[in-house]
Image 1 (cartoon, rainbow, N blue to C red):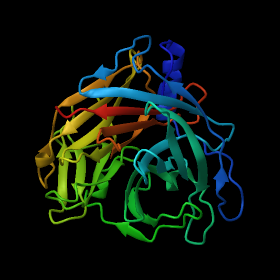
Image 2 (image 1 turned 180 degrees about the horizontal axis):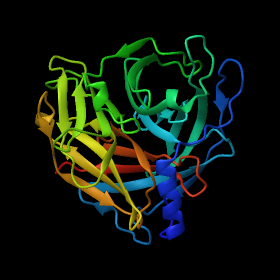
Image 3 (image 1 turned 90 degrees about the horizontal axis):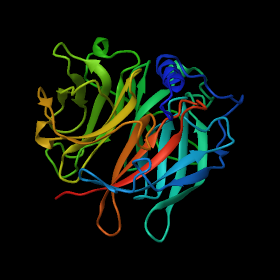
Image 4 (image 1 turned 180 degrees about the vertical axis):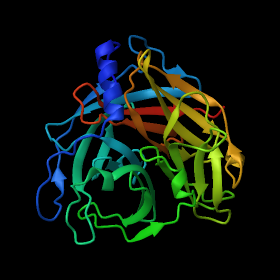
Length: 340
């Protein structure tokens, strides 16, 4: 949610955070898959006006600013790659699925988005759902052809069969373990991710709330699948809220976080949570890897995925949610995470 240092735009950003987004136009009848034209403007500098590439252990590769004439495009809350660094699936918090493909140039920098499609989420009868509070999709995990989605407002974690040509209603609702009364209405599960399949949690699902706090002021989370199911918390560090996360190959949990104030605008942060601290009854914590403010190419950063490039590089991809505001942008950013 950004894009200028001007006080007016910061005020609009604050209103957008506080207010309920308006759903795009909805067609009657069964939900059709909409082909969406995307224009992608390359981003070559992460720090505006500066050419450095290294930001702590993260190396900026490149990015894209995505625009479209489609009224439905935007509000991109979470995404996961179906094919490493290429084909992806995502959810918008206006109740849409989206699919597409990231292309790269000869220097491995992101260069465009193709084959982008959107489909509205449907009820059990196959009809589009047009009530925002029912389809405020925020978190997404993908495994074995199944998409697991976390919804806010009407708090739930549910599973869908992945079919890019016809996404149907969910077939299963999961027990998210955190007491329902502890989840704040618009601060529910923003992170839904699978643990390392070879680690202590054997690929089980982990959910982390955006800002549902326990009495100690830490953030509710849970292991909802696997051999060590149970509730834990993430240590809240400063005034940042959690917007997404994914497990790294070594078992640590990489979290994307966001902060906003009227005085300084928006910030984003990446924090590495020690894998051994992700445990029932524990308070998980770890170091900050990178922090960026409005002097960098960021917006309302809400989506994150981790993947391995064909040359072995460990990649971190980020995506932003523009809230369907003309003052915000849909961004895709790509980094190498150096491990040494």
